[in-house]
Length: 432
Image 1: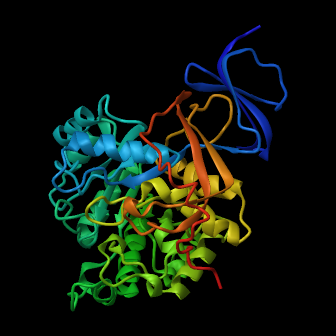
Image 2 (image 1 turned 90 degrees about the horizontal axis):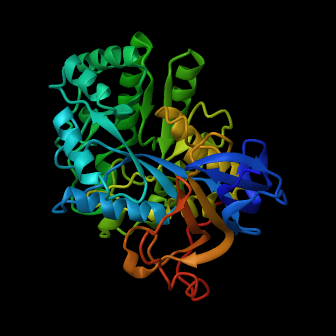
């Protein structure tokens, strides 16, 4: 009888047939079979999670890995360890902010060198598109393995990704149509952005109104409609634009969108004005917007907002990759959503977006990238963690992560988190 490398049993496994009891057998880093929970499966190692859920590893698209002043290799080590601690098994790296920005094969090689032997997760890369990018530049990056491209219509990609005008956007999309890879777009339109009237978060919110996202989205849809390119809005924040995306999809325009947990969990009314850990682009918007954004995500068809990513930006935005899963679950379960939907938003659809066919599902033939998630366990994010969830009580806890069937040492866990769960700290704002 065949002997497997590893068998993981769970009474709450998320598989393509639903959520239920299963045993997952792993050989050579891949899932060999998914069997009944009690099936006899000879193996070298076995883990029984009991009632703790088994999920496919998260695929986090558009992650910045390097903080200002940090070596690139340090950025990869720290970011991927934090990612693995949060159940992320594949990080799809944003081309910027980073040094160097991934806009040429040489820069991509620098990232490959910095990440080699340094990562706790799988890593894939997005190529950056600038006004100076040529068709040859894009083709060279694709030939060297990028899984998609990213650009900005304003300052969303940092100074290294200067905004594209409409001509450049159309030309880029025409090239990417032939490559059959997506273009991820930060869609705030530079012409609609103001100058903040002060240093606080409220001033930034006033300077970056929803109409900037709406105008940029209209530009992206117009270019995608002509070219047929797959355009992906990241992040999608202004919920008033949901109808525009739905209408474009109904016309056959291949546009999709992803949002981030902080836009779904934290309304502007609860954002301290002077706390820079809440600073991001686009800014966190109102509670009414948060509710409407949930409606777009829960549309069911995936035709408006289909996926959720961390939006991790260490040093230049919100850095909370470790808390994506529990923060999102805390808010999702209040709305009666299940682990299968959570997995679809964070694993399956992101993997499909960038063509990572071995990721996103627990089924035979896929990579054995797996997460043990105790959905019933509360925890309090340590105050020393920083970021917008510091001191907050969250529901759900990642207890173990496997990458290619091997358990990941993601560094010392927040050992006080579980013990502090009953000691208080603010909850995420309650849904109305």
